[in-house]
Image 1 (cartoon, one colour):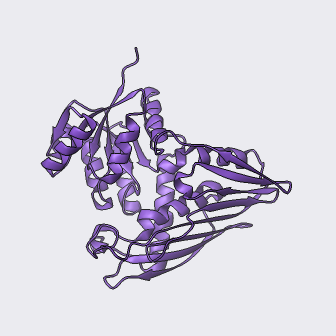
Image 2 (cartoon, helix red, strand yellow; image 1 turned 45 degrees about the horizontal axis):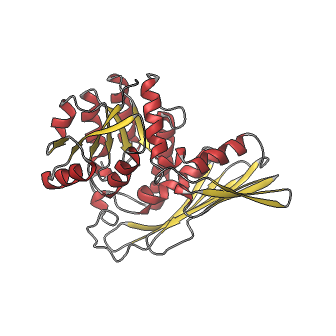
Length: 327
């Protein structure tokens, strides 16, 4: 009988709860450890998910032999340090998006992964979503013709939250771009590649956090129009259009359960419900890569993470989005 991949969780917050629920649906995975600086929170999480090993120190989990791969679900600002320490201890890592705050951080993380011969992947779960996978297959097969246009928006109202919340505090890398704007940017990159030119504008709150951003990616013969906001809600859908047809990915596109295909003046609805919330697919991808002794995923590689963060860096540079802890 094939042994199960042992998973540990760093940072038992809301995202980690969703992840843990889905991990329990993956046959060749088991949740064996959780670590948090808050011992009470770690114990509560362990009780909920029947996790046998609980740590109030991240390093204790890194140094122990109770997990093969660690899922890092802390706020953005802790990703680099925790991932590097885990990898230096020989642990494989799936780290929540964004992998790092900027290109410098992501490059350093990848360097450490290679030096320590361990697996590292950015947890961009949308890349493995069945809807995204199917639409990518259709576009690769030329069903939509030559792609000319991508539209994606992701917004929800969050200005009623405290200014020191994770979403709104610049000292925590708050703002829409790294939190939800990353999804529209990812989608444009996935379907159209790296743009030739970027145009972008942002609005900010009174303490300097970016709360609304509009972006245009210019290609030789295509464009992408992207938007993210905490100042309003939106449909949070997406459209990919080419010379022969188009696809409309249903709300919310980054976790969609299906899409509508428009070709030859006809439409066809395809329902692709996820197993669990949808984290199951990135978990399966990690397990598959580890079984095949791969140190990165073919579907979302180290280079993909570098390219994505470089695009986010360029948008930040154009719009004056900065964080006080950066050099």
